[in-house]
Length: 415
Picture 1: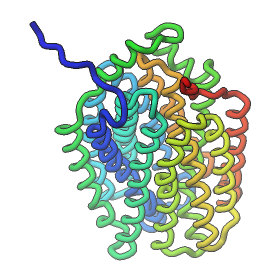
Picture 2 (picture 1 turned 180 degrees about the vertical axis):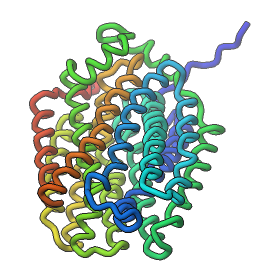
Picture 3 (picture 1 turned 90 degrees about the horizontal axis):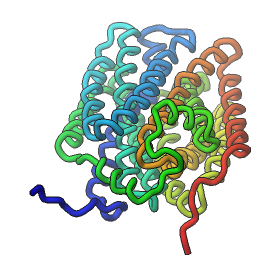
């Protein structure tokens, strides 16, 4: 007879070891993106002599499209074949990226590196999100997503700060990308030898949660629900898209806006790090807060706060104003980011939750591409400030749509 072990236990405390390990893995995932955050626009202008904003932001378009499509694939693969293998595959795809960024002979190599980076991010970040949701169960979902996004975006900030510092002292290439080799080796080692599969946690939760409708809808039905027909899931998807639309703009245009205002490379690195640092740190509060007060208010309010931060940056000409805009934008993003993921977990049944997360992240990360194209075209025609102001208006509009369509997704705890 085959021995049957005890059923898995859901909860943050019950799975603290694996959860903490996944937090660390996601920090290395975030650090890979942070390498580019402060210096790639400068490399485009100074080393490859690109002038058009659309051309400079092309690396974000490619990154966003490849990450978005891979997010969708990662969700499906995680439901069908398990989470851990998808995570390891993501790190293998990332392995060439630091070397391509170091030694790229022309801009096409940078584009190719960002296509691989997008695929890697779609596989790794999506899977760490899904695995943490699997482990904690419904009770602490907001806190779990706050911790996940905290680790990822704090690492984005620290990596951006480090590359800006290195670039100011040793040049734009190759030295700022040396840490990327360490990130890949550490992430792959932890994922391959220490992370454990979490699908059995999903099966355990699904046995104790009744399904709303078919427990296993088709992939087409999941896509339609998450994209269009379910008022909560579709509202979450559009907010996610606009949130990353403004993040794509911030990634590509803010360094150029700061440079045009006379900021040094070190100051640009500090400003590029400040926004994700505030975003990452504040999520420790906002994720847990959404477990207590609900999701909708934080989502709607956060989009308004983001719009205010972007507008403040558009009006700025001095370091202190730019820094204030980055802080406000970071707070607003922290209100929204973990809360959206927690709300997906509230609505989607465990049997198809990973696929729903994949669809949501498909739309969310398409926002990078949309934001880079929209901001680039607007900046080329009307100037940097006009492009930033347009994104601020779209962010405010997105929050208004969510206010009208969403209902609260967080179930009140029983007395």
